[in-house]
Amino acid sequence: MKKLLLLLLFIPLVFQGCFSYKTVKYSQISNDKKQKIIIETIYKENIKGKLIYIDEKQITLKKSGELKSVSKEEIRNVSVRKFSIYKTSEVVIGQFVNSKKN
Image (cartoon, rainbow, N blue to C red; front, side, top):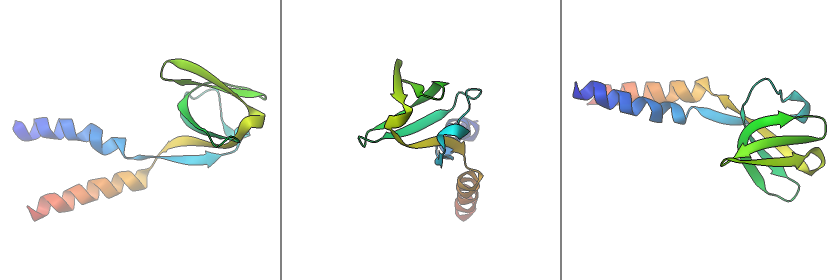
């Protein structure tokens, strides 16, 4: 029972590290998916938040409960959060090998 409880508590920690951010073009971002995004502005400011709305002129993110709009001209890079199967398998295999040593 203790092992099951520890496993259930450990699973969210494992999958938290299984995401990475991939740089994409502004035109590749879709309004359909409410994905997590990091925007690097021309002022070297990084804004991380959840996509609310995007059009040809600006992008709106929700960050800490507040809406933040950034015009397309102010954006240097846009990165979208993606699930990484490589990182996931790395963690799972590492945990399996570690458990066999004990």
